[in-house]
Image 1 (cartoon, one colour):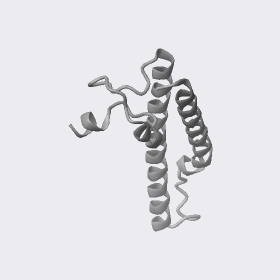
Image 2: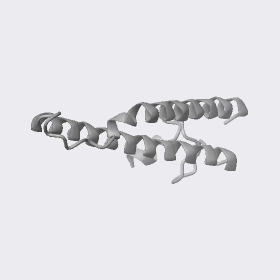
Image 3: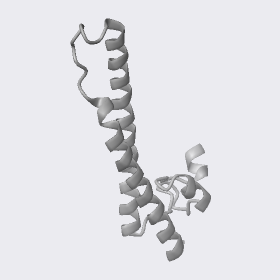
Length: 112
């Protein structure tokens, strides 16, 4: 893979990391503690709020997982290992990396 492709993938990864950061800021309110004031919020409304809070926390966990995968991809770039399958060592197809720049296995090994 040439330097232009690396630069393009690095920019793609950095853009996605910035998007995740923005999504984190938007999702903070949904993770806030749900108040127990039964007078202000009925029992069913509280259950809805608790469910929304749980979904917001699960979404945050997925963003954190994606962030770790993308940061690992940046480290592989710095180490010269980006774009190569961790199992067989073959080059990962650029189309696959365009869809998921954090991919660590080629299509054959992933389907394996």
